[in-house]
Amino acid sequence: MTRILGARELRRSMFLALEGLRAQRSQINEANVYPVPDGDTGTNLVLTMEAVAQDLAAAPDRTPDVVRAIVQASLVGARGNSGVILAQFLRGLCEGIDGVGAGPEEAAAGLKRAAELAYRTMHEPREGTILSVARAAADAAQGIADIPSLFEAAARAAREALAHTPDLLPVLAKAGVVDAGGIGLCIVIDAIAATLSGRDAAVIPVPLGVPRAVRPRETGSLAFAYEVQYLLDAPDEHAPAVRTKLGAIGDSVAVVGGDGLWNVHVHTNDVGHAIEIGLDHGHARSISVVAFEDQMGETRGFPLAVSQAPVAVIAVVDGEGMREVFEELGAHVVRSATEIPDVMDSLDTADVIVLTNGAPGVAVEYPDRTVEILGTIDQARGFATMLAYSDSRSLADNIADMRSAAARAQTARVGESYDVVAAVRALGPGEVLTVFAGAMVDDRERSEVQRVLAEAFPELSVEVRQGNQSADRYLFVLE
Image 1 (spheres, one colour):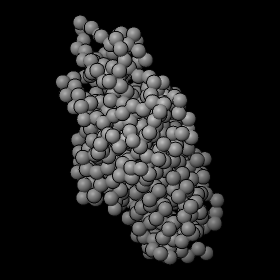
Image 2 (cartoon, one colour):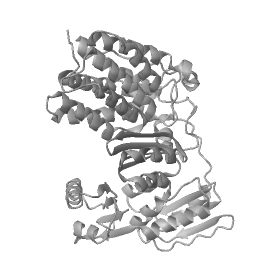
Image 3 (tube, one colour):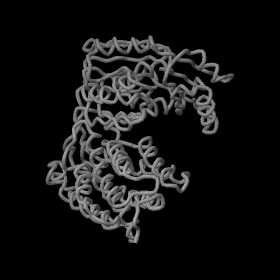
Image 4 (cartoon, helix red, strand yellow):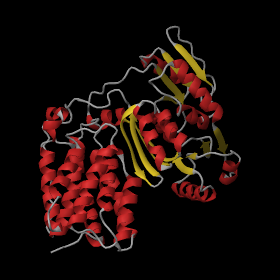
């Protein structure tokens, strides 16, 4: 009988958990109706656990190294609400494991700590979610004298709590499902129990009472259109302020981590402000912005309740990658000035901002609208300008903020004869460098540029994205 939770057991259980999450990913996505029905909880849990598995594959077979890999990789690789909470759960569990491993008392304390950290993750915790599942598992583990029995009890309690999540969260009962994040946590806890007991992992029952094609959008973040997530290098004492400020502009706020590294998550309309809050307190990197409309409208079939934004943005954009970037930030994208009237006719908002991004011939006159044209000189300056846009603020406030962002932006364009290091050095000081590669740049060259810039500027957070723009080999934006 296994008497300790050590390196070998942890490694095996994490790989088994990944296998289980992959097997039930689509069912978890189907059950995802809270906090927003964007159908990505299963995918986010898989991506989070894949990051753990990747680091574990390279970690030495010593308990401290395995623990370190699980904690660090889950934090850095966490995706979405569910991934962030899972990362904190694993962090708490691992706090109870010393250099040799965890016995029953340490494992029970670790599960209790895991539940505490999971609850602390969310700015506004809700029962009937993954949090309730975590607490039930921790409570059931207390006072059990051997490791396999302890985790078997925790796994049973987790499944029972999962079955009762619709009783605690009406949105789940209405949709005929259990909590999606809770399903994932049950899979992870059961994988540990199965590893220690030497049995096959369980398949977690997932009731799906309403077909996804007709399931309405029940609740959660109706007012917020975007999910913003990034890693933040900042002193630990700054985390509460970041959490509070994000809570003022959105919901589903999570700021988790420690020892100077934080994973930040929020649902908001104010993408630029959410990122700026991080930059005010530290060094933001690996920034991700997801539009719920894209996820729900295309993958779930939900009739989406779209907020009536006081101001819209139309941006002239060249390149499929650049189109995706500007759309992520909330812009309506056109390829040339001639397409602007058609988009203008489709908008419900009276106030419109047009980003020219260097395009010629942009002149818009609409008697029934207020139209402001921002003559951004190129797409790099347009990107920096869009980071300050919010569809929840007035035209005047947006114009002021976006013009200020455009004035502060440090940008550069590089053609065929290029020196990327020299181009960045010429920009001056900054923290976050975003590079957009043109259509003529292949994957190999883009990866090499990422490597060269990361080595030349270790103080910067560097991201090289495929912009597919036709005119410039590279566009640089330094913030």
